[in-house]
Image (cartoon, rainbow, N blue to C red; front, side):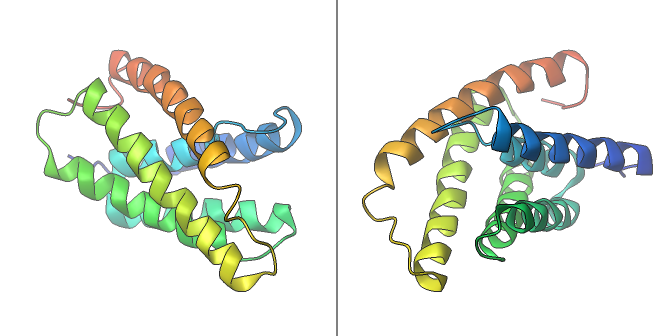
Length: 161
């Protein structure tokens, strides 16, 4: 199922990640879809757990580096997202839009909870009041974007059912 990524493919995904980090930081205000998560998610379901974890860690490192807040929460959460995405994808044979949508939503919730827990532990910031509203909205926005991206990738043959 997982194929070997070529250098050009990896660089394309990486450039999309850098663009997504820039767009998320400059274009969107307030609650926004997690485009970087989606890039990690689709990379992982296409290339497998190990490559998904490595790509997630690299993407998380860049997110943490540009945030200027704490180094680590996004590295951990994006790595876990890469592993979980590929692991779950490998367990199902009849992959479809509905299953993909459920998985994006579920893994995104786990990924965001990891970030919040890390920030609670390693910083003085408290996010206990802010978890439910923004987390739910972000999950819905990201899932909606994921549905469109998944449909496009299916049509172009980038993802198999």
